[in-house]
Image 1 (spheres, rainbow, N blue to C red):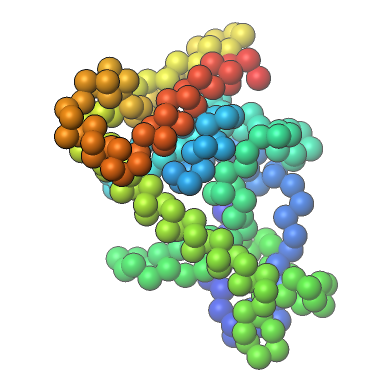
Image 2: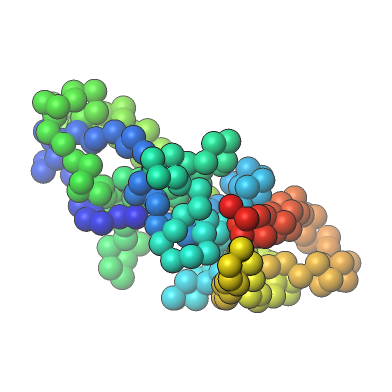
Length: 231
């Protein structure tokens, strides 16, 4: 989604504002989106939820938004997200994002440069006030991103637990539309048979960590797979 990121600071961007995001054209080519466990209960109503690993072998959770390259099924030709469908926080945080300094844990707030604007165009959307302090709009952005980051970390720990309980299995998702079949590999799901046959200790552990509602939401979401092929 992000094309030209620029790290924000109160010196270089003191006289800048952020343009309003008026549509979802920026997400039109997004075929999947990371989500956090905090989003499971809403996301499971509309999208299949899967577990996956990134290039560094780190776990994350994702919803499928499309199966053809560069085609988000939930954004129409006018840039509208499908009505009454949950919009993932990953999509809603655009044009802002946290980025990491290479080989360090420090997070920096960045913005897609296309959405930077001069203050004179809209005083209400300024990033910093005359004293160089964060405006309310930037404070709200930081609150949202900090919560998303914290939820992402807890979600990673949740998936590690699923892996330790040995209930995850790799799956190739098969989606049939009216003309052809599409295969999506590298995804993981909870194996229901393994879940049923867990030891008493692991079952108690799942209950103690209140993981069953999240597992159930994930399993419910899988019924959305074939709905993608008929959109």
